[in-house]
Length: 361
Image 1: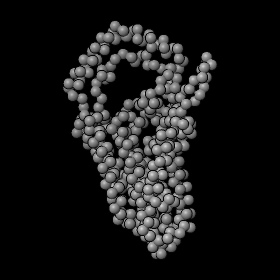
Image 2 (image 1 turned 120 degrees about the vertical axis):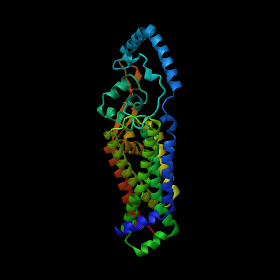
Image 3 (image 1 turned 120 degrees about the horizontal axis):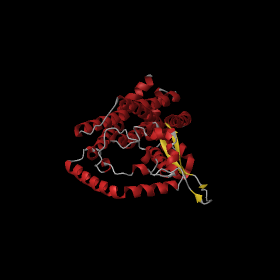
Image 4 (image 1 turned 135 degrees about the vertical axis):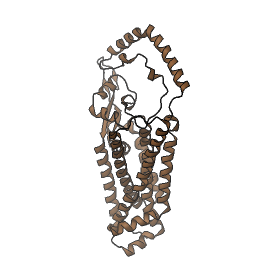
């Protein structure tokens, strides 16, 4: 504990750490600013135009609605298991009103979470309780808070990772690490204290940035009058997300320390991690069902309590012609958390073994 306290002081004496905290607050501010337009309620003129469009559509529906519904049901009957929403074709006023984002969303996001699929694939996905739970999560909707969770939260984790990398690479480059080992020659204790200090010391950066984001978005919607309903269960889920984000930040910082020791150069460690995450996100579909083992998907699952992925599965329809239906898989939050815990544990063990034997001169 003495070494950890010393390393924590050294961590927060570095300009990189304070710069990371400042950048986290900047990211929080940008997340709030980007939601200013979406948080504004529709104007009286926009509402009047929407009501006129709605009246025109109602008039058209009264003349053609029966025919449209019949055509829809005929097409739906031709594809067993399909759901074209034939009973929901009648125009509704809310379809024409300009949308405004609320602080949190309680609407089911199934239509967007399935990637726009319809027919048999969507119906098959809908029967899964796991898929439905992810789709109806607070973090899968289109509110300002869920948008911030998808954009700002990964930025906070990246900042924690950069601080962790820099914490060891700078000392290796300047020779300060070798000098420190003359005072504390037990390398395992030195490495462990640095990893622990990075994991604990970056907590204000990650949590401070996230709380600033949540507070800023809440104030924005409260001022605009579009706060919506925020229940106690919503606040409990926000608190749970904050806890998961905090743990993810600690793991990212510890991973940064490990990669900094293994690769020695900050540019190599940060660039290599960024390339890996980009590749796992950009080429996910080519891996099919193996997507469940990708780092980005598992991080998303841990943060949001579950994540959906889709992949093609070749099959043959009743006529014998080849078809490519899409299957839906789910990675739950526990799987994502254990995945990242295992990855960071392996990195830490390997980096610790290398640190004990490497010549630091």
